[in-house]
Length: 116
Length: 116
Image (tube, rainbow over all chains, first blue to last red; front, side):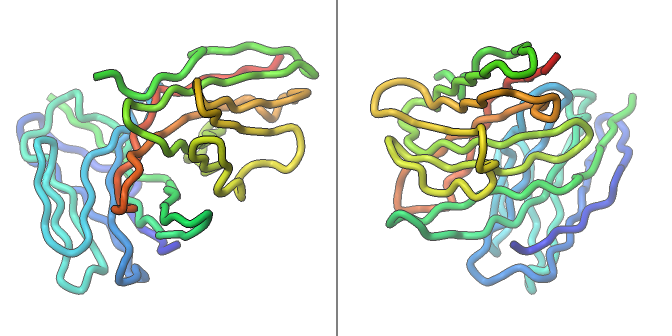
């Protein structure tokens, strides 16, 4: 699995954009970048994923560099409820039992603290 | 539009007892993954199942642990003769089965297992 590197912690003011970086220099051509977050005592929450094009949904935007070696998750208007651990994951595509699937390898993530 | 449902949310067992953790995937999802999060650590993949089949159990301890996903009913993670080191949060995730192997996994809120 391609490894990812994230800063251990970041701060953001409420209402401002939170930009969370991730390095994945060993990513393979068919591997997607996924972002999840985990709020204390809850299960990981899926945010967004992408291959090479920038992606946007109702929660966030994902910017992937042209060489795909790094990406940035953008929360456009952070709120206090966005305080969580954010995980950047490069998901390996595996084949077994006649099907393709992927298992997630979670690192330490970035602890994002949004303050008033 | 229920998400992934896990029960119980909290489970206390004495050493040597059996623990059964249940997971009902999201409607329409036929892939189930189990992950374990030890205290102060990241989530680690345990096993991946499709209906009635174990596809990948490379992350599951060879002894005392088993998993199933029957044709009818929830997926079950079973831990026999529990030991203190089994104390952890166990998360289940499900995804939609389709040609696109990059369907995101959606997580439940986990079962917190405590061994006395």
